[in-house]
Image 1 (cartoon, rainbow, N blue to C red):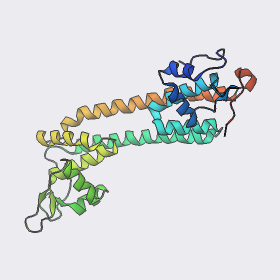
Image 2 (image 1 turned 135 degrees about the vertical axis):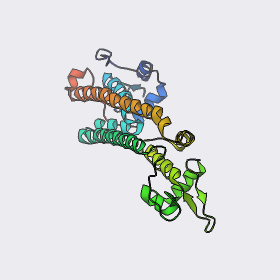
Image 3 (image 1 turned 180 degrees about the vertical axis):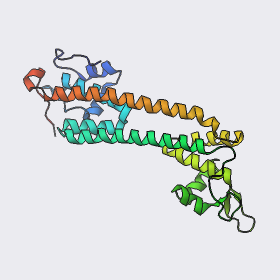
Image 4 (image 1 turned 120 degrees about the vertical axis):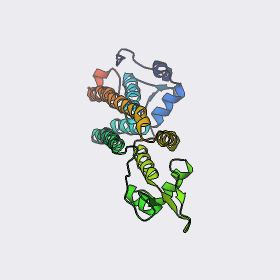
Length: 258
């Protein structure tokens, strides 16, 4: 809940820091990054903040869980430059990414439904029944052959070697595992998390062990969506506060210092 600091008057860096469990240096860093409006200065050069700065800090910290640090920083910079259209564009971008992540999760779940223990997800290209060489498989997935070799080093795929040519040959299970790994990478999973999941799929003869990971993925997407709603409420309140007449804020709006 947004705390009313309109009667607080002049605030010190420590006042903002304590409210959020931050260090005073973190508050100074946020100001230097443009997350907070520029601070006022006393006759002796000490920073002074106003309730508007406290609102800015609370807004930024509310935006981070849903948008990430970099995007939240860019949003606050745009708002503090009175470039609200740019801030809204950045917010829209985060929502678009969340929607894309949901679509990716749907794609993973569809892939899992289609890939049963006996499924053969790719046609024979001459390497054997349901098997593929590195080039055709990379092309099918829309990735580079070097990526498949990286996945091999991570233990995600285990291609055999053609005895005549020495080329890598990916059998039906490898093709399935590569397809699942590709979808999981799009979902934000690192190779260190994908490898044990694929190992479980391989040991079990199918993708059922991924159910828990998908439940976690659903939960993370839901948490991001909820965090975006909370951040939007704080951002709207901050925008409204900036739009108030200067005299009603009980302080002069800080000007940029060179």
